[in-house]
Length: 322
Image (cartoon, rainbow, N blue to C red; front, top):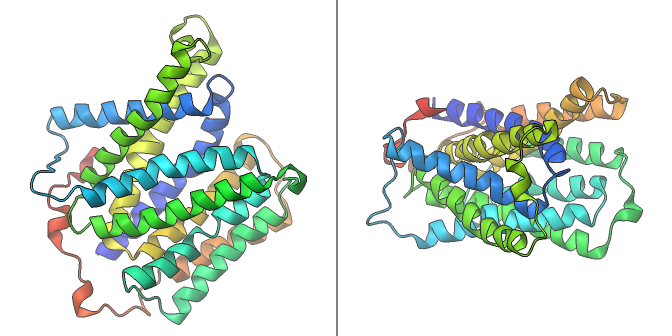
């Protein structure tokens, strides 16, 4: 039952992230990357604070070691989004897809070394199949490798490593903190770390945040729609689902769902933006979906005695908030 909950959570966050690309692209026509990050995480942090005040969610950090939680928040969202933003700005999309597509493999390796997690042979094949699907999309994408600079590759590698370590640390933190507590800390970390530079940028007259409060502009309304989607769904809901899936799944099994984001993004482009659907994308979609299904297969998995999930890690959860 717990394994199925983790799988459903993985499917949920991949769908949300899959559509976030479209929202991000529209909103970046008005705001800078730092302003967008500040706005989305501030909205997310305020929402969680309101839910906490109303008693909808429960957060209790007393008598708990905050060191692990601090490292987790530093990795995600702070380090990951900084590396990803500047990496994408200095690299072609296909290069970014290949590097970030290596995330599940990196998590599987670190999970084995740090958490002593093991995948069966068939689950490892599923993981490799899913990664192959992402690489196929990237190789046949329209990105121009001439756009890629060494600094871009370095930043993207940093983003991928940050995400890998986040999955490992969040999995470890699930023994102490509930998914809501981890998500609450992440949202406020992002709001503070991205909000301060954005405020400084606007105080010097170089920002655009105050444009959001001007009336009579349809583009402003679209920007608010993107910010609310990214703040409420892509931040609060999606990161909660990631942390929730890590409570029930191995880190490598949860991370493999990030490849499904590629599938959702491709389908969103075809259905919403009327982009062409090429044969390589069709093959990639099949490989990714098949790989995720095999990597999360339970019929080959034998749980060891010490691997059972303790209910105390989710004792305060009120799942109905989503």
